[in-house]
Length: 291
Image (tube, rainbow, N blue to C red):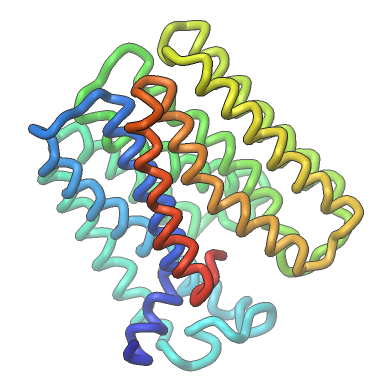
């Protein structure tokens, strides 16, 4: 792989792109879309890829000064990519993402506008804010899933992305301790609470008839228990390395979460196709960091 290409893939956190794709595939199945919508699916996969990559590039642009101290190995502080190049790439990808979403349809485009706004607000304004920062990051996941659901709205469609929204809010709060480590009881508690709330919201949607399969609800509860146990384990093992491995697990688990969400409205054997995204995700995470 050319050195320059590898550096850019490191900048945009390539493994995370596949978790964004999982949102799109899950939304496609949840909305009951078919082969006649394949072209829209492809446009939204492109849009999601662009938005995720733009968010990562702009994150490093705005964080460059701080990264020189805390993460000097990243592309910008290490001198492998200029700060201006990261900004230019991020803005080009944002525009490309909106263009792809517009091509998919008006509904996806309006959701894409919300996603682009949240990316800019998080990276450029609210990242350091302990409340607004996690909310903006959670909103990014909300709009990413909403883009594809907006292709064919149905009753309760805008309530489903609340699940990844809550999940990512908790994960973002926990990520604040990724560099320093430490026995951060508040951060660990909030993340664990968010995992439980996301699972509870899924159960409420089942009770309201938005989700159809109780098996999916059972699976999300099992996933919540597993992930919560790993997060609570940071109370005893709280080095930066422990936080980083837990963060990697939580982010990669988004693919499993999307599989479970899809399985609540479509046969499990269809939803299970989303799990194939673990193949490129796991392969790439061995080469590039996901956080």
